[in-house]
Image (cartoon, helix red, strand yellow):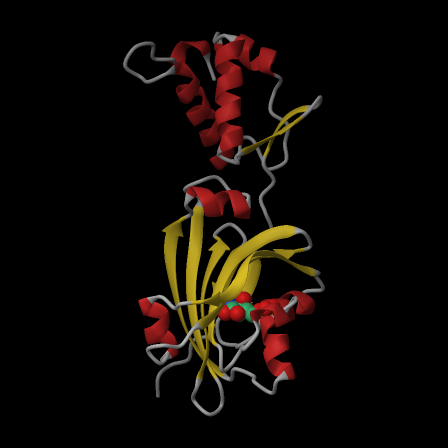
Length: 245
Ligand code: 16G
């Protein structure tokens, strides 16, 4: 942060140069997660930059989620969130996974109802031309922390009344004797869009994992086609591999 290092002119705005250097200091571990940032006036004195520039640099880091500003007590390097290890080889539900970890699950409903299916839902669920689809869109939280947005589509023959799902979809299906026993899952990396970012409480463009699950009942019928968006900073997906025989 030495006063000499700033490029006035073509090095880009000074506040961006400063926020870049502060975030480098964080990635190099010179400023550790949870540690307080030096007060604004100290950074200004150290760098020879104006307090307005320093304030703008810190506000930018806060908008990116790298810094947390606490009213009255200053700014802190954002704590590194604890990541969940999630097995890719077991067919479980969000509620079951969180219960096993001793965490409480809450759901914020984004949408729930019966709709005309989209072409990819017709294909994924093998629906008849005139069939409707049950849709559930919800934010899943673990101990109050937003984890994933799930958008599930099910044939009405499997879930006639989407309103019947209060907390657990798999729980509601199990009550009707319908337990998915097999699933295909596809995971891809995405940058979280503005609206989903606000729901997940991450910065727009943050890393997310998009997961598509198609699950099947013992008789081979498709039970659900769910598109989930998991926070990239909250999950490690783990699979056990064995040597092919
Ligand atoms: C999991 C599944 C999702 C399923 C949900 C049911 C993934 C990527 N997705 O989150 O497909 O619909 O569990 O959870 O694992 P529930 O019974 O708690 O509603």
